[in-house]
Structures are given as C-alpha cells and as structure tokens.
Image (cartoon, rainbow, N blue to C red):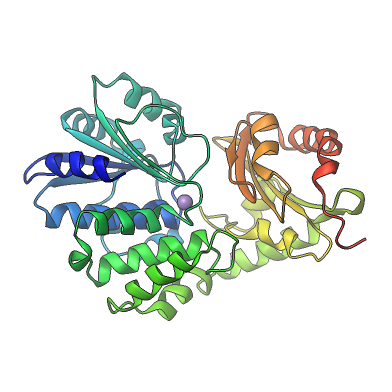
Amino acid sequence: MAQQIEDLKKLLIPNRKVSLVIHRNPDGDALGSGLALKAFLEKKGLNVTLISPNEMPNYLKWLPGVHQVLIYEAAVSKAQQVLRQSELIFTLDFNDLTRTGQNMGNFLKSLDDPTFIMIDHHLEPTEYAKFQFSDSHKSSTSEMVFDFITALGGQDLIDKDMATALYTGIMTDTGSFKFPNTTPHTMRIAADLMEKGIDHNAIQIKIYDSFSLDKLHLLGEALHKLVFLKAYKTAYIALSKADLHKYHYQKGDTEGFVNYGLSLKEADFAVLFLENDDEGVRISFRSKGQFPANEFAKKYFNGGGHRNAAGGRTKAGLDEAVQLFLEKLPEFTSHLSHANE
Ligand SMILES: [Mn+2]
C-alpha cells in the first residue's frame, strides 16, 4: 500500500490526462467516489474526465459536479477518444472491466497498455490494474477514496462539495450506517466529512425522502406482490415490464425495494427481480448473517458482490428467472439461521 502510494504520487503530476470510470448503473458510492476523486485530482492540476457507462439515476442528479460526467453510451466516440488519450485510468467501485457493460468493457480491454488504478471494495478482483487498492472489508469505495486522498496528504483539499459526494457514497453503501460493513473507521471518516461543513440531514432527505408518488405506488405494488417462503426464510418480489410501465418507472425508482423483504423478522434472504427492457432481468440479493447472497448471484445469475448484498442478471424472461431461483434455493438451506426456530 505505502509503496503503491509513493509510486502513484510520481504519476499524479499537473496537466496529466486522467480518466475515472465507474460501473454501469452507477449508485451513490460510484458517483460519490468519482466526483470527489475528480475534484481532488483537478486541485492537483490534472486534466480529469469522469465517465459513467450509462445515465445516472435521478435521485443522484443533485450531486455537486454531476453534470460534468461524460456518459459513454451517449457519446461513444468522444468517450473513447478521452480514454485513448488518458495516461491513467482509475476504475472505481468495481473490479472487473465487464461491469462497465459489454461494449465499454471490450473497449477498455482493447486499449494499448493502459495504466489502470483500481479502488474498490468488492470480493475477488480480476487482474487488470497496475495499481490495485482492493479491500472487501471497507464499507464503500468512497471510504477508500477518502483514505486514498489522505494517504496522498490531501485531506485539507477536501472541500464541502467533495465531502458531500463522499458522505453520500458512504451513507448509501452502509444503508445510513446500519449495515455490518460500518466500522469505527467509517464513522470517524463520516465525522471528518461533517466537519467539512456538509448538511448531512439534507443529503439524507435528498436521497431517501424525495420519492415521487409513482415510486411510492410502485412500492405499494411491490410489497403487495412480495412472496415469503417460510421453509427457506426467503422473501422475493418480481416486477414485470408492465408493472414498471404502469407507474411510469424512472431509473432508480426501485432502489431499496429489496430491503423490505429482509425487514421481515423471519427472513434471511431477500430477492428482487426486475424485468428491464434492454437488459433482460436484473436481480438484487440481500441477506442476513451467514447466508451467502453473493454465491447465489454468482452461481446462477452471472453476478456477485458481498455476502449480504449482491446483484446479478439474466437474459431469460421474468418467469424463467423466478423458476430457476425457486429450483436452486433448496441448495442453500444449510446457510439459513436457526435463531427464530
Ligand atoms: Mn460500493
């Protein structure tokens, strides 16, 4: 770590062209870490572009600096040109280039000898980065970017906007500091960010108390459709294209829905199936305790993540995806808790 920082310091020099890449369907942590790192590197005099593979959800569009994000999907040739000219490419909040999507992932892999710098907190990183900062015990990439900036001696350069971005990332990835990934270190960073003058209550309200009526009605529909499989301590919700259409679905509207299943006292495992126009079915997995949500996601739904929070996808139809899930669920009974029996 220390040696990597020393080596990197020599590369982070004024006027150098640098790109920061975040994962497809960016969340608060991806965007928060990206915006803060961009601002820091710019203060160091570098020429920085933050690239998102696709459009960000509306609930994050208030973040300071968000309108400077280059959307790869909307400007492919420009984004490719920027990436080709970049001497360094930071990849934030993911650890496998395919997480940027098929097309962008292939393009990144095709670049001639790029210097990738990974900052990420997911398990099982793939080998593509010359500099790899990977730690699955960290709450969030935003926490790691705070530590990264600090290690480079730049903590004083963190201003209110950067602190707002980092706090948003940590807050969303920890479920407002309640998930098991929240550590004393996480809380100390949150305190440091508060001292930069952020309005933490306003951030909370912008993220969690800014729903549209359509979103609340869609949530009502989702909760009504929730199925609880007592024998497997598993709750699942499947939302079809028609359900989403009925409530004028906007990107990000189903954020957090999967957690309602897990709020059932007896539930160890909660799953949300979302039939999406362009990507088949997207699946979110959440679990309590030892239940390995990431193994389920990896084994059957082309995904992965953390033990208690994972994601996956399939090109199959919605009914097929649910069928596969129901068929494979019995394989995981040994991981269920016995606390409530
Ligand atoms: Mn994250």
